[in-house]
Length: 179
Image (cartoon, rainbow, N blue to C red):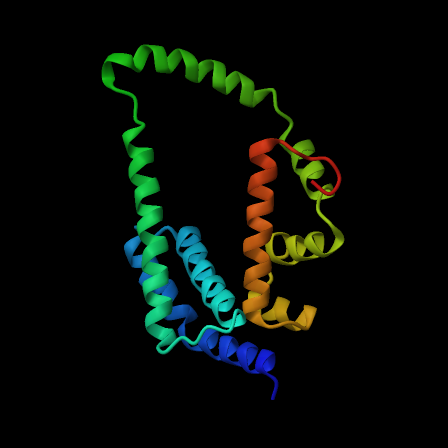
């Protein structure tokens, strides 16, 4: 068996063995934020995959996954802590309320359906298919892997990349074709 096939088989086995355990590990540390826990798990597997594909030997993949996931959990906790620190002091509440009204008026004027259509149109055909399967039809990762004839870790990697691309596009409001 080639080295690439061995790496893919190892990743698949590790994913099967530890995905759920790692998810629960992250979920317990992230105040039951399921999406953040899922992101931590996907990121941990992406790092492991990258290292293995680069030819690095990981002596204890289980420990590596948990340590990597813990690092992502810490980063997420720091982000959440920073978000909490951004709360407006009571003495500035009136000013904040006024700006909230302007913000809400701005939100009311945005056609989110049109934005979503433009965003999806900016994706390539493979990304549109993946988006449709996962987020429109709520297809499970293992089912997507069968449909696309790729491994579950590969589907997870593509989902992370898709999330990152969409987040970047929304942040930049960059909806040109191929964005």
